[in-house]
Length: 364
Image 1 (cartoon, rainbow, N blue to C red):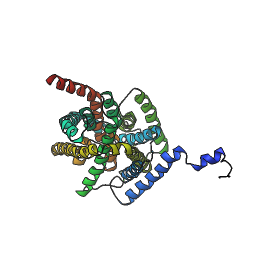
Image 2 (tube, rainbow, N blue to C red; image 1 turned 30 degrees about the vertical axis):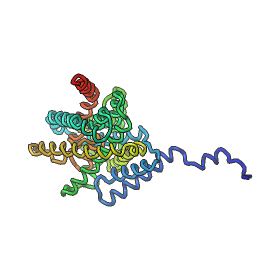
Image 3 (spheres, rainbow, N blue to C red; image 1 turned 135 degrees about the vertical axis):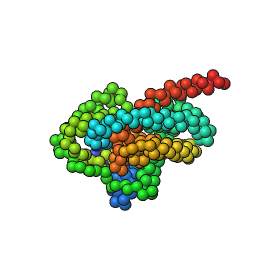
């Protein structure tokens, strides 16, 4: 018989870690250690990939991990502001000139998803609606929510999209390094913004992003800061200053943490066949869009093949923009490509599926 006195309430609380400690603080420490190790080894996208791999491993082990929305938004705000500081009137004019190619890239991604949906559904065992929304090059949350309206499997969509982004972010820098492309430890150049200017840029971006997100602007916390800091940079208010390197490291850790936390153990274990098949299909799509990017690069003046590959890549907007920034590519152009595709996919994903299924029913 246990004669020990009952624990006081405060003692009980101290026995188990608080939820915030388990779900955020300890994982954040692990993410930072993973990022530091990856960066120290000289591997591509060290802080981002080290963080993502560490958090992904913890999530797959069954630990409940979640990045708080304010922190995630803060990371996106830093990325967007950092990219916008490189925008000059010449860069803005150049991005407008690429608009037709941006539309081609968006249409190509959607077309490949539609073309490969029947094959993916047959091989994976998923229903065609779920297969379709899994392959579309849209955001994880957006595609899961839109797909659910059309009776698609939300968990499968989220799992496949997280896998898609993880694959692209891992493979592109690794392939670039393999073929001799110099991958810097951290993209930079120029002097860092002074404290007053840094506070002004981030403060204005935060206020504007709060407003545009309430209006329903896609990727508001990434694109709005890019526009705000781009306007300030183009008007020479920022004196050609750039985002401090330590803030870019924080942004990489946050984006990596968010990416790794998307790998939910229960979803992945429930969909082994779909994931294996999906990886193969996604590699096919990735190869095709990369080939298209390289063809455009042959006729492009002033843009590197790597910039265009990142622009056409079917990865997430934040991840691809940050990857371009860290690799020293034209991150503003990459962000513009992904913004156009995100808007196009979000607008037409549902109506296209409704049209396709209506046509299929009519044919039968």
